[in-house]
Amino acid sequence: MKTLLSILVAGFLAAGCGGGEKTEQLINKGKALLAEGRFDDAAAELKKATEADKTSMEAWLQLGNAYAAQKKHDEALSAYVTAKRADRHAVTPHVAHAKVQIALGRVELATTELNFVVEMDPKNFEALILLGKVSQLPHKQPDGSIGVTKLDLERAELNLEAAVALAPQNAGAQAELTKLRKALGK
Image 1 (cartoon, helix red, strand yellow):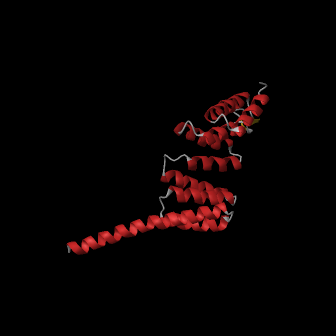
Image 2: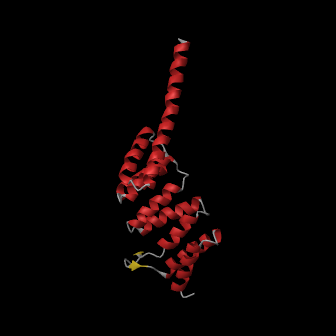
Image 3: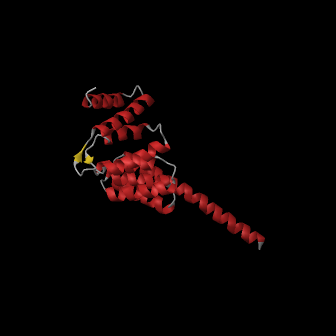
C-alpha cells in the first residue's frame, strides 16, 4: 500500500511539473507571435497558457497584451485584472492596465493605476513618464468642465522631473519635460 501511495504521489508531482513547463512553452510561443505581429494567433496560444495555469501572472499579462494589440480593450483589461490578482506585487500588469485606460480616454482611472505603481515602485521610469503625460490630458474637473488645470501641469512636471532624475540621458523624457515647461511659461 505504501508503494502504491508513493507511486501516485510521484505521478502527481511529475504531472504538476510538466504543467509548468507546458505553460512556459505556450507563453514563449505567444510572446514570439506577439513580436511577429500575429495577434490573433498569440491570443489563442496565450489563452491556452491561462487554461494550463490559471494563476500564471505572465500568461494573463501576455494575453492582455495580445488583446490590447487587437484593440479588444475590455478583454485586455479583464486579463490585466486577473494578472494583478495572480501577483499583487507585480507592477507590470498595473502599467499595462493604465495604458489601456489611457487609450480609452479614462484619465482618472489611468492616473489612479499609475499612482499605485509609483507607490509600489517609486523609481518606475515608465510609470513616471506616463503619469507626466496623462496629467496633461483633459479630464473632468470638480466643477464638471473638461480641461487641464495648472495644478495638473505642475503634477506632470513633478513626475517628469522624477523620471529625468532617474534617467538624465533619456532624450524622450528631457523633451517631454522641456515641452511641459514651455506650456507652464518657464
